[in-house]
Image (cartoon, rainbow, N blue to C red; front, top):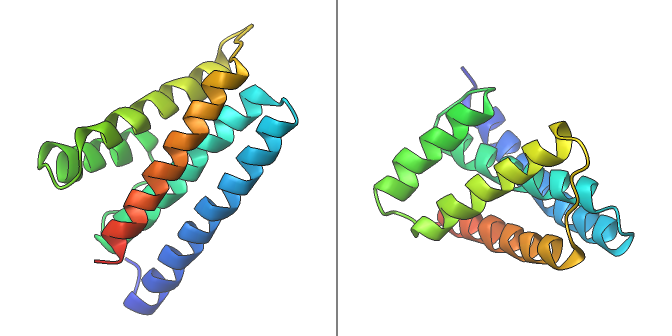
Length: 131
């Protein structure tokens, strides 16, 4: 179990990782490294989601458990709009395709939309954390 001081530091660290990952994803998109950008887009959301989970004293190392927790606590309960559950699910699926499937090709327009959704998702998590 993490003590409160460490928890606060870790939440801030994960949010900084999320912010840094936005910038990295933008750079990768502009460099036409689209599959890698898709990976970073998901991980930016993952870092923000980890911060939210830590703040709520939920800990797991498993992505599926974290997403399930988020869907139960924030989407099913209507604390957040269901679009945020869809954004996260799509990012996870796209990251998985990009990392594990062969010959995956994302268009620049698709990745730009994913990046916009990433920023929207992270901003929403920050709002929840600042309440």
